[in-house]
Structure formats: C-alpha cells, structure tokens
Length: 428
Image (cartoon, rainbow, N blue to C red; front, side, top):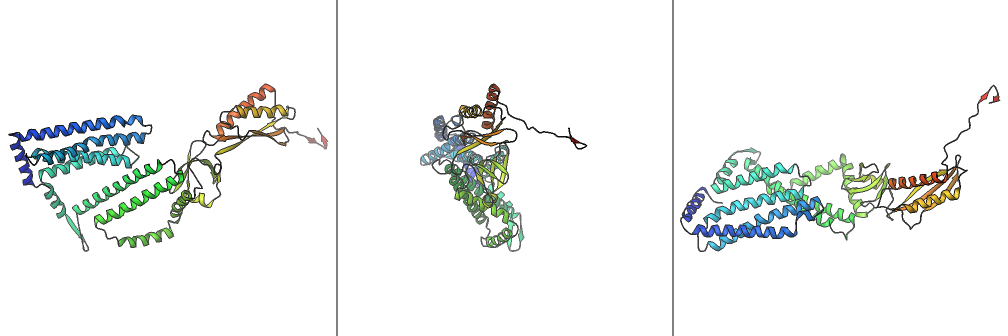
C-alpha cells in the first residue's frame, strides 16, 4: 500500500517520464493492452451473443460474463507489460493505471456475482452504484496515500464492552467480511445449482435435492467462515445450538417438520415436478418443490402452497405416480327414446377426433345404469399428462358430442317429476 510520500514519488516520477521517451513505452503498453482486450471481448462475444439464448436468465448471465472479459484481460496484460518494462524503463504511469484498471474490473466482478446470485434485478441497481462508489472511493484513498490515516481514525473511534474493544473499523471489517463471504457462498451455490439442474440424465427430484443440499452447506460454511473472520469464538455456537434445539422442540417443531419432510419427499421420489396430485382437498399439477412447501398449479391458474408435512402425513392421490397417462371420464345421459347404439358411437367418434386422446389404451363407452330420467353413459379416454389439461379436453369432447346429438335428434333428458295434488280425499 503506497504511503502519501510514495504517491508523491509516483507523481514526481510520472512528471519526469513525461520529459523522456519512457512514457511513450508505457502509453504503447496501455494502448496495446486495451486493443488486445477489446479484440478478445469482440472475438469471444461473437460466438456467445446473449440473443442466441432463449432464457432471460441465460441472456443476463452470458451478457455479464461478456462484460468481464475486457477489464480482466486488460488488467492481466497491463500487469504483464509492467513486469517486462520495469527492467529497462520506469513504470510510474503503469503503476498508477493498474489500481484504476483493477477497480474497474472489481466493479464488474461484483456486479456479475450479484446478478448471478439474486434472481430479482430491480433492487440491485442502486446497490451496484453504491458498490461502484465505494470501490472508487477506496482506490482514491489508496492512490493519495490517505488510506492508512483514515483507517487509524476509524480504529480510534472505539468503545469497550467487557473485555472486548469494539471500533468502527472492526465493525466495518466485520460487515464487509460477512457480506463478501456470504456473496461468494451464494454465488457459488447458484452456479453449482445451475450445473446440477442442467444434468438432464439425472432424475428431477434428485437434482432438486442435491441442489438444495449444496446451497445449504455452502451458506453454512459461509456463515462459519464469516464468523471466524470477524473474530467470534466458535465455541459460542454450542450455546446457540442448544438454544436452537430447545426452540425447535418447543415452538419450531412445525417448521422443522416441514424441512425434514421436504428432504424425505426429495429422497424417496414420491413426488415429482409435473405430477398431477390431489391432497387436502386441493388438486393440481406440481410446479415447484421447495424445502418448506410444494407449489401446485390449480386448473384455474392459481398457485397453491402446501406444507411438505401434509404430503408425508396425509393420503395423497398421485395420478401420475406410475403412469404419465391420465384417464378422463365423461358422463353423458340420454333419454330412453333415443337410439342407444348411435349415441355410443357418437361418443367414440368424438373421442377419436380429439388430437390429445391416445389411441392406446382405446377410448371406451360404458352403459352405467338405467337412471330415473334416462340412460347413463360414460366415455373413458386416455390423454398424455404433459400435453393438456383435463378440463379443456373434456370441454372440447362435450361440445362435439352436443353437436352430433343435435344432428341425430338424440335427446339429453331433463329431470321430470309427477305432481299429485290431493284435495278432500280425492286425487286431482
């Protein structure tokens, strides 16, 4: 870290270099480094343009990586150029330029990690500006040689708590250490989660379980490392662990049950993404498995969040547990005066004409019963689970049945009742 005197020597050396050919070599190194870095960025981004990716997350990730190529490559090239020139020429200009380039690269790296760690982007923009201002302010203090004096001033602003001395510098270092460690842990967890979720050869439930475990372990390690860097004794965690155990036993058992049930669901593979289930008077398609709840997409488009322990302790109807095909039963009733065989043929034709109805198993029509108002029939069709929702398919088949019934004059009966009025003992 240069002191104030060293910074003055750099400025004095730079003024001396400006009067000789030394500065020309340094300018040539800077220009050559920037040109090569720009060429590398253009050459690499040409094959990985963000617009070729369909996912918005992938476009943001690739775009962020492309923006890192120029500052990092420029920094490496300038460092290499200074190492070569310092044996023959003075390198005062390069010594001043390197911290500036390093801060520029550091800002891009920090923004990249933030965007890759957190899915939300709106609230990150002010933080990106704060990080940029903080880094440039630190570089300014570093170059001017004022950083040691500022650190001493912050360390002098202190107070004592028992045997411990706490200063503003210590608090700032602790906050910065925790923030950097947790950001690294979350970023690494997100990167590894993306790699695991991209392994299509692995079962989806297993991928989700491994990704959640990796993220939890990395966050735990990040917390432990951050506490160690701050100076907190790890033996204090035993007291915290005991208090946490008492809390889990008394008031957090439901939360702990949900988390443990989440691991059970992921390990035994009793529930998978895209499964159609009925549980606790809720039905829908599983769209997300988390450590605390399962998200069901209902037929009306709403999302139902059901705690994991309900899936472990309650009876669950999983329509696609062993077979991804669904059977849709469509009840129809016709009058006794209508031709039964023609009505049954119309039902079969309507089923075979629908694009999502499978040819195997074949659609079937059953005569269920001779009811009070008419003959009850039921059409059973099989559809692929992932191709369409049952309600739209049922509606389309019912519409075709209705049109054909109208053409053939087949009547769908309405409830009929005989009313007998008795007046003074006589039937009217």
